[in-house]
Image (tube, rainbow, N blue to C red; front, side, top):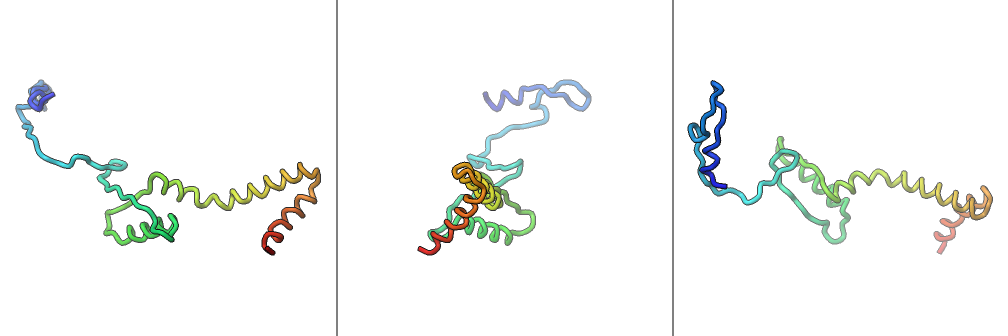
Length: 132
């Protein structure tokens, strides 16, 4: 529980015999930061923020990536949390729209018990809503 107790621990020296840690080490208290921030084994800084009014979160992510590009060599960044999820799922939108269209077509085909009526319904509905 005390620093002095650590110095009483025995460790093996170069010849293999056990010696107390105090024979070659000292311990002293020093002030330091109350929290050491690290990420993936590297010292790091947490930056949090939100998009300004009138801007999307995608705009904020793009601006942060632009600013990080101006840092000197040796600095890097990684996204975590909700921003990481947004970046990873951004390219899935076209796939999801395609799956939704197929799902709606099959649902209408089951409803009308026909393959041609759902196609005409799906082609007319966007046109009808556009004319309003």
